[in-house]
Length: 268
Image (tube, helix red, strand yellow):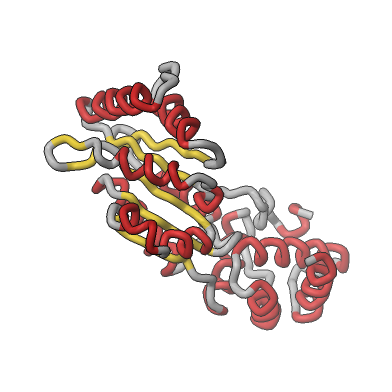
């Protein structure tokens, strides 16, 4: 199929790949805030619906950060106790064996962060799927870690990425102490109809395509069905390419897009 469309790789893979990222205005703003948070050693909270591109943005951030100035790590499964969270930080930012007791762990983390400070390197902790954090104590430890300071600045940057329920959770009154430590909140909205067309074109061309295979009508159908969520767009677009290939067509028109949407409906 790739040869048929003149492609070098799959244009609508489900695997997050910063090479394929399409930066709408919303995604540019989110990335800019993440970069600012990393540079200014802030806590940043970014939310968005499932499949809106949060994880891909975090991979893009990893590519953008200067490796001589930043040391980023990612926690992709933040479930677990506060103690396990602290031990993860020790293991991710150093080669040390984590201590057992909380007091010793916090001292160990301070030593690690201070060693980065002496090297003029900023450690950046990215917590993906932060809505999965099950213990409030974990958020308290995140807040306490930002107490580690030198020369009136934090020793670590922390970026939390999560689904909208994270935002709702942190709005509650008993989260005031944590909210006060957050430098920025930002919610990534879905793509609009115009951006959906540009998204389809962008990913197809990054994969090696030399033309735009989706007609305007097809793009509108994909936008309507996906509600502008990139992960759903990928699914519909990939299926549409398969249908077009089966029909021997190099273009996805209204009929092919509608067939892809019907098939998606049957399984969603």
